[in-house]
Length: 321
Image (cartoon, rainbow, N blue to C red; front, side):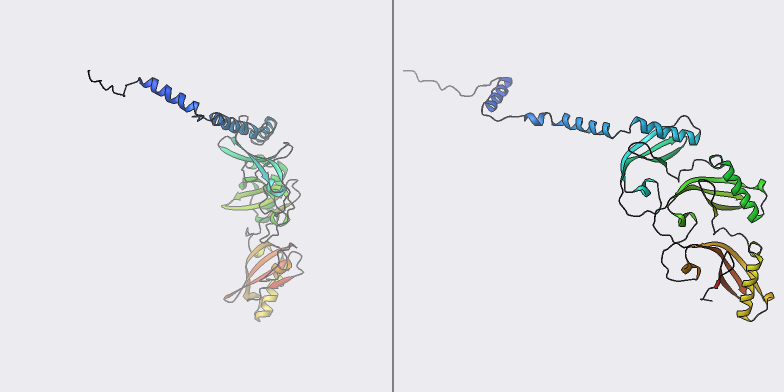
């Protein structure tokens, strides 16, 4: 009897057949290679992102209102929106670009919109309905041409009167729209409360004879305030009666003749409250302004500083003298 030949159990099945059998085995055992919900996850996420982008787009009526405003202010027809961000402004002060705002929460839903005007970018705040559109007052929207002619003339006349500079030598080099947070800020107060009592207007810079002067003016032009840090000269700019009172006081205190004392510097100032006017070292932040001057008098080799109010009813010598 012939011996039986051993038959090898290995057989080289085609690769495609092996893969098909393995796949069928896995499916029959209930183990799925692909989860149905996972299979559609990627396109679903993309669809959601696309939907969110569409929802956050700036409404056409808001975009048109902003573009029209920028075009009107600049005189440029080709204005385009370059950025629009949904925002919740904490309160009307923030919405109106107030520089010093309270922390009250009176939210305004809307957008921060950036438009391109020539080579500048202007920033707007717009509420959700598009009924309120506010341009950032720090955006320079031009100089004198953007300021009403009557207001420009009044400011230039004030410089001419105060500094005796001929009108033809003066030029408005900057006129920025601003929302002053409160009357204290508008009046160049040095220390102001955080109350929000906005004043719409402009910050205007005038140049002439190598000098410049900064003004705050309200929208109607009824209030024009010169920055008191602008030195308006010395004794000649101070009313004669006030100058005489200060010189007499300095002479009496120093026991010198009035010929031996001299006013060397006069600076108009808005003292934010009586404490500041009286050289108080620790003062509250209340705003009870006193208009007047800071006057420096030379007494021998010393310099004495006085505060005097506009009506000449009060003048105070610095107690540190």
